[in-house]
Amino acid sequence: MNKMNPTFELYLEKGGGEKIQILCAQKKKFTINNYYMIQLENDKNISRNSSKCLGKLRAINNEKDKYVLYDNGDAWDSKEMERTDE
Image (cartoon, rainbow, N blue to C red):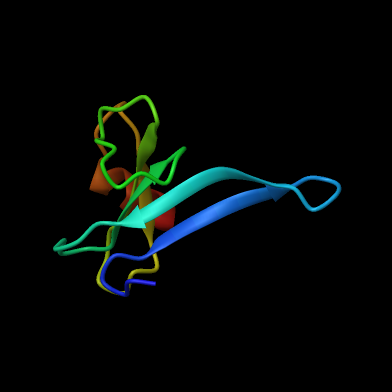
């Protein structure tokens, strides 16, 4: 596994041991915060605009214990996150 750009895969195992890949998440290189692209296939060339890209998961603090899941909808509001933490 490439430590700078790891890939995580989620499989569903059917009876008989057959495995079906459901999701793939790949850490993007050279980003300040942890940032993972979540996609339906393990393809390094899928862009954010592809129909196979579900969104991205991004750390929002330095401790990397809070994440935001992005899709192509509304932009994230940090003030909204602060209100839900209380």
